[in-house]
Amino acid sequence: MDSSSIKKQNLSNFKQQNSKNNTIKGTLFALIAGTLWGLSGICAQFLFQNKNLTPEWVVCIRLISSGLILLSVAYAKEKNNIFKIFKSKRYVKDLVLFGILGMFGVQYTYFVAIKYSNAATATVIQYLGPAIILIYQSLKNKSLPSFVELFAVVLSILGVFVLVTHLDINNLVISKQALLWALGAAFALAYYTIKPGNLLNNFSNICVTGWGMLIGGVVFSFIKPIFDISGTFDIYTIAVIIVVIIFGTVIPFSIYVISTKLIGPTKTSLFSTIEPVSSAVLSIFLLNLSFGFMDFLGTAMIIAMVIILSIGKKQ
Image (cartoon, rainbow, N blue to C red):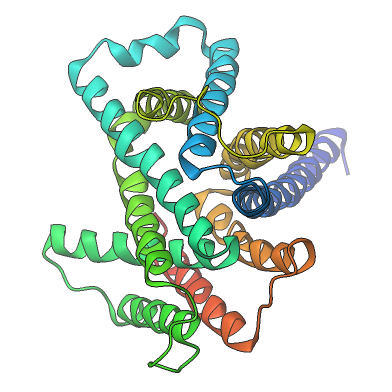
């Protein structure tokens, strides 16, 4: 074998090894991101139940702090380009709607659902978002979903039914308030996913998300000022809030973006479905939550829906 053939073989081996390393790294990042998002819900439940903080205040401080951090990261990479998003009235309108109805909406409904139930249940029901998106796209495009997609939607609805009733239609396992807020979080998640499409086509993920968080947090701070603190505020409260901001928001979002670049959005979204699983497991070990067979069955059915839709739609 001549030297050129050896070089080509070495280059081929290097590319294969690099591709393998990227796959492993991307998979780990997606799994870690999902797990940290699950941890975020657990921390929020702790703050509501043990420290009597309000969802309004926690969401406000989380969005403003995380938004500023993400924009700082974006500025370090893009410099003044992060401000170009404000040069078009259309972009500004989309960004404000995304920040208030999307970013704040999904955070607030999710946290209130946690307050009235628990992190595991709220997280699982929120994962109805992909089914809602599918229904919306079908209505928008005036086309019927495929049999597999329809099966996935029905499966997710049955999953919520099992999770909420434990197959006893006369008794709800969670309160009506918790169910309504969790369903609201699912609709907010769908809006949050669909709305920034035009923005993401023109600006980076970190830039759009950072501005969305900051705008959503600042606007709501006029309703619930971040200096208006209620509940028990001690060293443990501060520590958990830092975990929510850094480990529950900034880090998972950042590595999720990296994961999509390494293994693609489809695989990343599949691996990140570990979020409701991690939320359930962490709730059991950290908050002594009782999670029975029906809870696991309903959770599995909803996660199966997400997996089916992700595999069926490479978008």
